[in-house]
Amino acid sequence: MVIYGGDEVSALVLDIGGTWTRAGYAGEDIPKVVVPSWVGTTDVGDDTISKSIRSTGDMSVANPDVEMGDATAEAKPTEESAAAQKYYIGDTETSTWRPNMGLKSPLEDGLVTDWDIYENLWNYCFQKRLRVSPSENPLFVTETAWNTPALREKLVELAFEKFDVPAFYVSKDPVLTSFAAGRSTSLVLDCGGTTTSATAVFDGYALKKVYQNVAGDFISDQILAQLKRDHQKEVVPRYQVAQKRAVEAGQPADVDLRVLDGPTDPSYHHRMQLQAVHEYKELVCQVSETTFNADALRARPPRAYEFPDGYNLQVGIARFEVPEILFQPERFIIDRTQTVRLNGSTVPLGAAAPGESPAGVGATPTAATNGPAGGGDLLGVPRMIYNCINACDVDMRPHLFSNVILTGGSTLFPGFADRVNFELQHLAPGSRIRIHAPGSTVERKFSTWLGGSILSSLGTFHQLWISKQEYQESGASIVNKKCQ
Image (cartoon, rainbow, N blue to C red; front, side):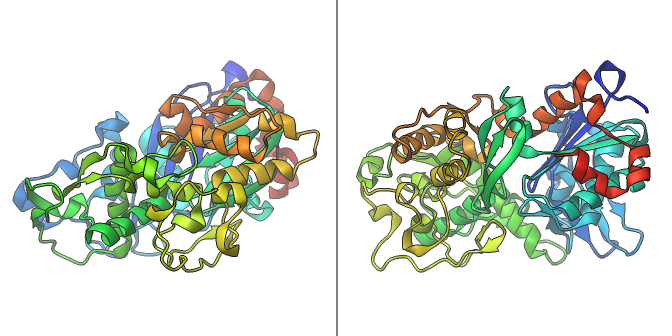
């Protein structure tokens, strides 16, 4: 049998999430490729940039992405053989306006739902960015803790049948995050772009888990709703702005909009709006370190922010309200028409209590402490952690409470780790609570990929690979036997 491991092999590590895709080589401490998982699709052959962009001479949106550090690897549209559909992958390609170009992620609730887009992301990472032949490198892929056996089998078929890899392995996200933190036992709270999950990991195995789609993108949508409710502000994405002029805080934007030579797909416009408020989240929003107290938070100084069209405002308590959704979802959700899913099932949102608004909440016990308000099933982050730990064997619980790991971009809100610690101290007063929250933004965002990089580079890992010979002899079902 061919042995893969240690310095004798350059395994490829691929982590495709709902929002971001990361790829690189085993043994390295940062992925070489970081691109959006959202892929542009068109059903027509016209991939031209709008005339308005050309006429204004503003081609900044079409320049190669310097952050990727590889200008020669700019994404090119790839044609699907069965139809006239094209795919556009990469920051530059997905941000550039095209008539009728939609944006779609291959995952929903962490599970692959569009295998064509998923396969194209693999192709892009291997051929356009890493410039390697997957047939010459073992492939290590990540998956959610709730991935199904059927989807895992389809994954191993894709690896061996379409990409002809010599060896393959798939491992669960929370196990890899725990491994990256140097722990074999932990409770991993992963709050990313499309899902928030809590998973108990014991001796390297993912046990109990709970997940819901109240995460980064959901928060961004709520910010859009909050701006519309409080300021009658519809966020204008960068692709629509031709020229802007300075205005006083709170005054309507003075902006010239580009005239686009074709229809804009709603999915593209919405994704660009979310992109526009992403920086707002990073620079303005904050989590209350203790129980949400409106009076105390109003006393904190506001923060100024300017949107792409020049509209700017001073943000006071509102910057605390939307992130509070992660801790009290039933109480603080603004747009209650949004679809909310818990463990893959839709959860109906009741109407807000008459006369009650988030800003009117005083120093009341949080939903994270008392359970979901209004009889709903939504859980705040601390309650997700607490319920997940309590579902495990009683002997495991002390080890889990003392090894809570925070990962995912949405855990980077200032005050997030302090609030989780505060709430868990109240939920489990007799337990020793220890929160592990890496200070490095890179480590927090890339922990799953990093764990895969470390694990697949170990010399002792060679016996775990599924070889092509094993796949040919046993079929796709072998993935559910060897990859636990």
